[in-house]
Length: 411
Image 1: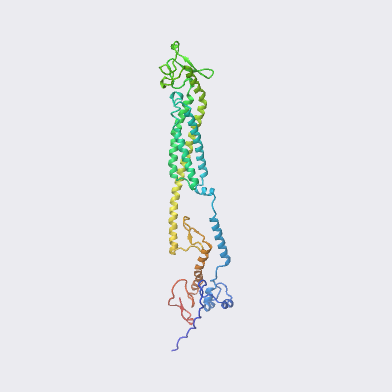
Image 2 (image 1 turned 45 degrees about the horizontal axis):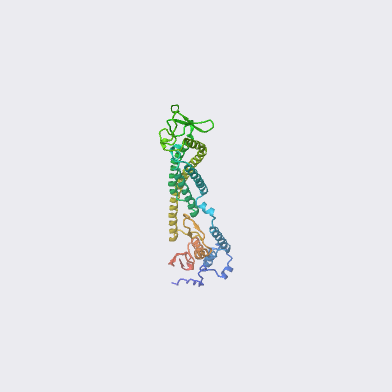
């Protein structure tokens, strides 16, 4: 029995560098073979499999690298561009201008209301007979005006300094209390204005009383004392020491009756100015009521959006953590140059690497790219030539072959 023919020894492979693909074609082979891409014949591929595998393992074009680097540079420049002060405020709340405008109106109307109420209280004696309940029903409005001004100032300052609005839950609580408080104080102020406007109508000067007569409005616009017929012979008392005094109930004493008449006419002359000032305060009260109600409704809407966005943000963070874990484990491979996920950008969001890191990543992924043509050849021929290796896997036993003359092939 004759011995089987010996196969020709495999050509010795030249050592290759770390960055170059294994079994790179030599200059002689590349010049003598005019093949392009995968247009090689099966016979040529079997004779020179190393050249067939390395034909497609060329480095990325310089134009593509320069374009990717330019795009990365532009992206980084756009991202690092500083935001203006207005843009930062818009990022915090896109409706901040309208809300600040409403709060500014509340501050202005609050200051006007405090000035009006302060003047009204300071120009009164505090006695009930002056303008009925005018004095006692106005001072509560100072509370709502003051709290409203302080709250609006806090909201504006916090938003400007922190670039973020006050928590919507806090705004719901404070605006609710304020517009409910304005309902009460606005009703008190309205009662005081109504009492003032009715003072002196139909000859009524409030709660004054005398058993000897009363004041009546003369044609010249002054109040004149009219003596009762049953007490014509008796002089009237104006010092408040007896029951026949007009203001005996409140203990207000005058040195003589002429001083009392001058006091009554002075109140009558001040009534129009006082009524206008109180009317201004009442209008400011109702403005505060309406605007705080509008801000309360707006805060409720913001609270709803805040709660919904908080749930969405938590879901995005959870999804981002899952994707990042899959990337770290190697289950998901991000696109080249986009290997890191920016926190808070949501699921599947990547950003460009700096040019140096991107180039390093491309160099590390380069040998894996060179293995794709070999795997495609293996799928076409069903076998691998001598000297070819898979992208991952250790050398194994001799594989099956239909061409016995070429000797064993190794996988």
